[in-house]
Image 1 (tube, rainbow, N blue to C red):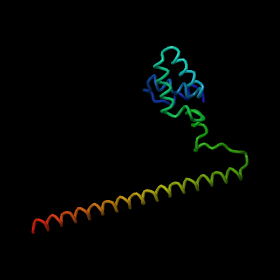
Image 2: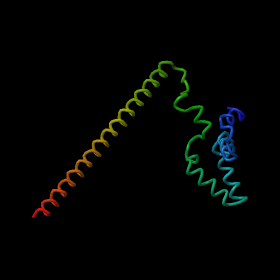
Image 3: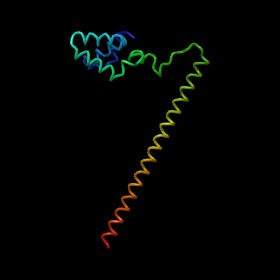
Image 4: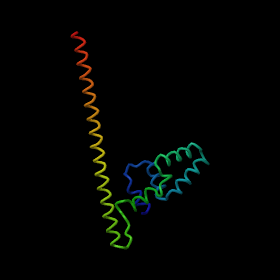
Length: 139
């Protein structure tokens, strides 16, 4: 992706920070590291801020930056050249995504059931306390 097409993906009102981030992302992890080192050399708070930003945004530990993810992300799987393997890989990824969705739905149902049980327990305790309070007031 060329510089013009990559920066064209940014909104028209993107600020200097977004443009600088896109420029560094286009050049890869080593550009981020070089910018951080230069930041420490010229004005240490800038280097420290870049270092924290790299850790916070997980740019330091990713194998690639935004540019590489856009070209090889899940939606754009590269072909291996073997159509049978590519078909198997696509089918396996589809099944894994279905299993993940089913598991997340199961976890949601489990959390909902737990929440309902806790709420029912709360309401039962509240009713028991109200009944005990009324019994004490009648006596």
